[in-house]
Length: 157
Image (cartoon, rainbow, N blue to C red; front, side, top):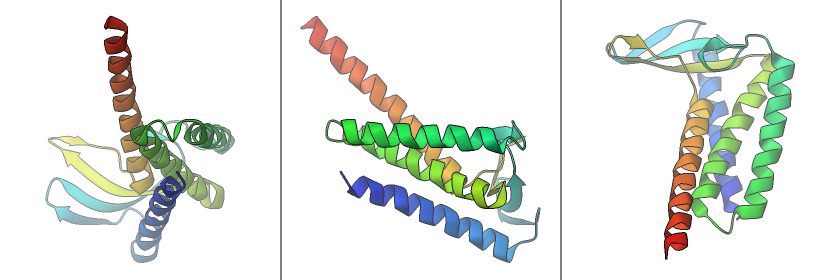
């Protein structure tokens, strides 16, 4: 089970390293086009949550993040042996939560830089930690549907 902590640590390290690269090598709001009209690296800071909501609510983010981290650790220890998909999802959530938590603790804002324009919609700029959180939650949702389906199948037999 402990190798799932290695996954979380890898996400944290990758997140912090990529953010460090952006801060060290780009001016705030500087943009480097990678794929024209689709993907750019854009140096951005966010003192809120997704889509810029809850700006400057650091105490709220600290409390919520600690609750999430404790909850994830509890579920990892309790259910890790039952489902690899669950534990991988939880590891990704843990790594993402800690990655952004570090930024909030040290700088009272999160470094974002992955900037996608999809069709004519300029998607909110995000980072590796955000990606890890979304993928992790997605895996947890998929796992929930799989487990629900298994339960229904066994109840119908």
